[in-house]
Image 1 (cartoon, rainbow, N blue to C red):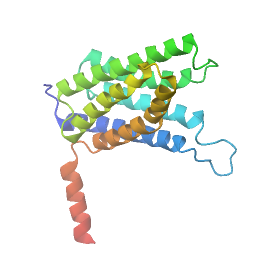
Image 2 (image 1 turned 30 degrees about the horizontal axis):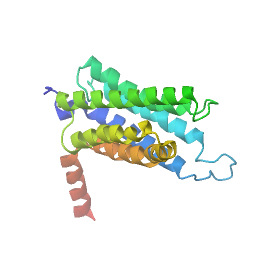
Image 3 (image 1 turned 120 degrees about the vertical axis):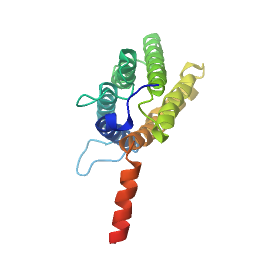
Image 4 (image 1 turned 120 degrees about the horizontal axis):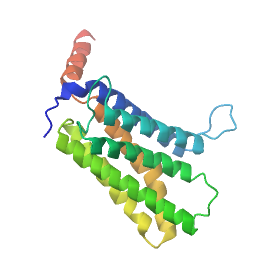
Length: 210
């Protein structure tokens, strides 16, 4: 296990967690097909999805390298840092790939899609294992992180089944609901990581002064 204490990365988990939660919320709002007020640009277009992917990448970069001298959630592991950043890059690349004028059933589209899926799954699992072994993140956030990377891997399996319609349907569910919700929950858990006592104290003070 790593020697880092919870307080040693409190800025990293706060900023990285907040960015994760924001990315998840943007993705959820985009998938809800909400229309911006007085605008002809649908909020459910590729624009919010791309913004969500960029924010997601920023979150994983923050969590990987840390801020203000902190180590990040994978400790000092270079492999862990690279894997976590590649995990975020994979989502952005997958989103940008969907903009290319390729037929969904073409060989090039299928090959590229599989490569990106493998990249995302492998990078997520490697980063998750290294983060758990580093021991920097503990408590609920530790297990939510594990659930997110394992869930991402399990929800990627349908991409390799021969039923294209079913694979596409499950991929949409994963992209528009499952993973965004997972990122929001993980983001919140990281943002409050190591702050339980302070939050309880603040709530108690508010209750006493009400």
